[in-house]
Length: 381
Image (tube, rainbow, N blue to C red; front, side):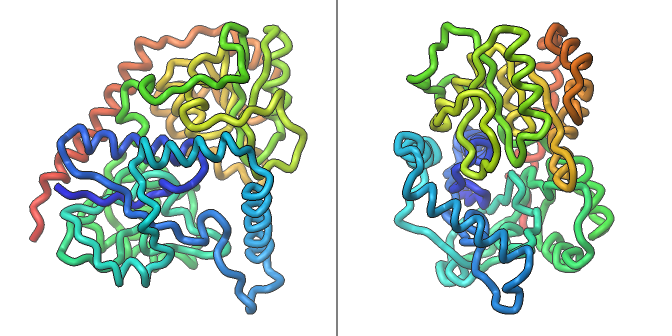
């Protein structure tokens, strides 16, 4: 089959790229022709256009902030890291940037030709304050022939959705031929919003059993030295203190990858890895501290001892995704909402039963593969 995938394949975000890699790699291994529909809307990376009617709104502030971040990275960002992201997208993901679609209108005019379209994974169904719902990520655009349309493990990124978006989401869900979702909270949302049953499947990173083929050593880190790898997003609160404490009591060097959105004191020493180097840094770490879903997911898949530190305040909703996979793996105790020395001391010395955990991952992988195989054979009426 000729398969088109709609996801955040273009973002300079490690988790977004690894989940994109996982789904396409699995499809290619089954003998299909799979590629990313190179849809790169302005609103995902830089917030979109500023509306004069909402000039003094929080949404406008977010758009301005994102645009300034992009300009700063373009002018002053680490060249080796930017080159690394670009090479990963072209060489590993097979993305051809000669064909980029920026809007629903451009996609409709392109009239693309696919046997099957898949939307997912990542937070493609998470409505933004500045843009709202993007129907393209529900596969609601024109194609040259009637293509089958399914979702694979998309995420709402939260456990609740503002009421103003529910009617539109309901209409879009009914246009899909098969629906799967990544979190149990997402299942419940789909049931409440549309009355539909969605299959629960794992993130596409789970579809890959071995990541060593795309790992690359980061030249500025001595891999023979013991170190802690801290991958965090959105806030330094609690996670900075936790990572520094674990590094100090275990005499570990502390590294964290560059975050272009950082407005706070860095955690340890900042490194600028490409996606393959990021994987290598995590794989060779003595310990991992993260507040990210994909930081959690890759720690589990690469069998690295880890702690997940929750994001606090209004952003606590972002903990839902990591909590979901921890629950599925019976590892909820490796989550801490705040710095807790007694709990951290226990987790540092606690051995994870990797044999049992890997068996759970194999079962999750089977659920994902089973859903995909059934729906790749879906008869279209």
